[in-house]
Length: 341
Image (cartoon, rainbow, N blue to C red; front, side, top):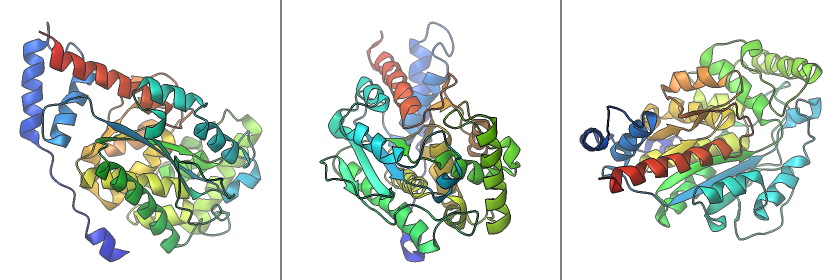
């Protein structure tokens, strides 16, 4: 574990390339910062890749895992819905699929990674089996997983992302699925922001007040029992995280190591980003924040990462939906940069 992490090197951003893009914008714009945050994002692409921005080939990596705390009713849906949703993705029928295609991410560019689903999934060309366990343990009673399992989940995402980059993908888009994962993400948010559960636990799937009270109690108990510390990011993942979140953290780290921009989606993807940033602070430079979720903890989490989202639309679905929308906006901005007179 330690040897693998020590082998990862995050290259410095190319600030000369960033400034070159800014100069190009200044020549194109009818007035200063005419396209606002989209200009900043295009300049960041230049710094990440070290060259003039162009429309990049994208892969969406959807990691999946179940959560032992789902038994408490923290979601409007039972744990079995994780499998049902994965079947929908693999039929290319979910809303996330539609938005991904609209953003130029074809069906064959979506990779569903089973890292911790509590079921055996049927083989499919776009399904990658990296199962570490059949769901996490109940983290109100002890750690969600062992330290070794946390590492394996992170390495699973790292390996999938690395293979995508080797295959020619130049940008990675984060997506996830797992009933109960906003509870784990709220716990992670409390650890890194220092905020109490009443300020990190949100409505998730649109739960009512009764489930909300249960969800807060679950997070409070998890923090009390496990005592996670933000200075130990891998242990935070092990104590109160999820396998799909560990996988996304691995994707973020691999992207940074290979100069591939990574689009963060909503609350869950940002929880994974906090883990990745805790392990490799320089990885933040290769992260792009797509949107501000309606989840109450999301802004505080993005503030820690010093990332400013492009879109505020009250979205809360996750599954890469917000990221897919903003990918389309980025490509439009890059088209202006390269084609406008």
